[in-house]
Length: 186
Image 1 (cartoon, rainbow, N blue to C red):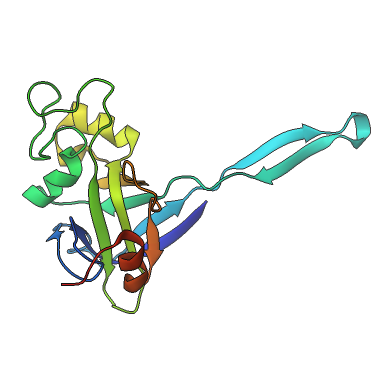
Image 2 (cartoon, rainbow, N blue to C red; image 1 turned 90 degrees about the vertical axis):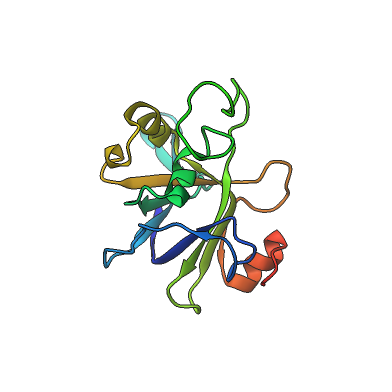
């Protein structure tokens, strides 16, 4: 698994890699640290050969989904969008049943978000369809409070937008992201 550090600010619903969108407060704003990106690369192990000539062989598997670990320490409307967008249509509140929730066996909603680095010369990270990782979903549903995300780390997985042929995520220069996802600078 490759792990990379990233520092910057997160914007939901961006119109471009450099501009537009709603800033999500409470992410690395009050600590002098970075958050991390993890790209799992599973290794397949299998037995090969017979008898004394046999052994275990390893092969590199396919790259797994990108995992972004955000130290989320805020309960603003923008932060709730990240937490609840996969549960409700508006992403505004916790509503596991009733009006506006994702139907049974329906594809849950997701949100577009870009991570703009502190320095414009560093790489930007974008995905058109972020979702909360499965284990964190369970924590959100049963705890109903941000502090129960231990230790306030919100894991997000990058997905491909439904019906699109673009990549699930891109960590690149702003111009490359704008080209890949047809975003335009304001």
